[in-house]
Image 1 (spheres, rainbow, N blue to C red):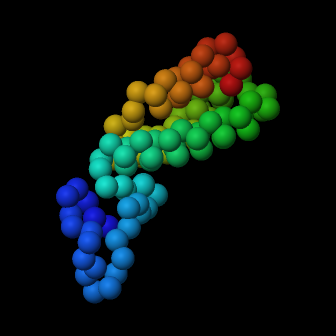
Image 2 (image 1 turned 30 degrees about the vertical axis):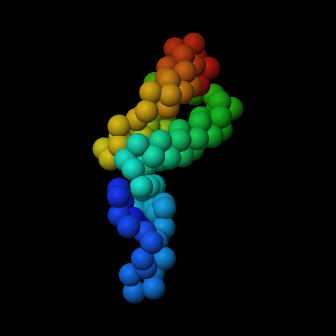
Amino acid sequence: MAIGSWDTSTDIMAIPYRTEMRILGVRINDTAAQSANNSWSTVTGRIRAQARDAYSRELCLDQRILYLKIFLLANAWYTAQIFLPPEDCMRQLNSDFIVPLAWGDL
């Protein structure tokens, strides 16, 4: 994988260059901004899908908070250790969890 201004016109040992790869579940691209956006959009999509499944459960407030912390935000915490979340992903997560949790819809 070529990072930054690496010359991709010459192959080394006949191995083609890639523009994206996954390392430990994190998408790595040519630039850090692309990597952060791609990784966080994947994480946000997975969390939103899991949250939709949780809407059908009847949980009390303590159980909702526990479910949110343990299951839904664990992957976000892991990704945040590598890349800071973009603002649009943070807005999506806040709107998907903070408001429904406060109104008892999660």
